[in-house]
Length: 85
Image 1 (cartoon, rainbow, N blue to C red):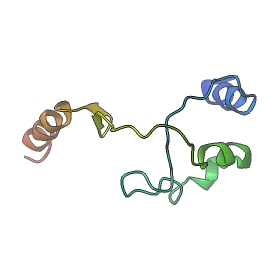
Image 2 (image 1 turned 180 degrees about the horizontal axis):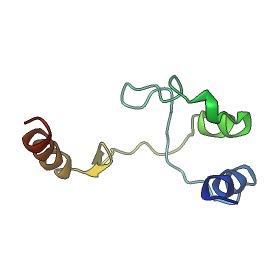
Image 3 (image 1 turned 60 degrees about the horizontal axis):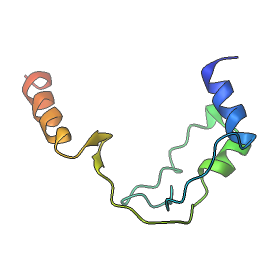
């Protein structure tokens, strides 16, 4: 069994506990993460889990593009400096 299969199995069997953080995958800072879902890896069972809005506390993200605040700007500047020459 590969990692993805194990992850899917654990998620669908409720192996992981759920937190109390609010999240809406259809409206995440203006992005609808469900629109560009790769149907090639489609699992209706996972789709129903990942596409659900969760209720809970609304928190302000401390991340930009997956990086802690302040780090993304440095990465972006490095990217512009070296990639776009």
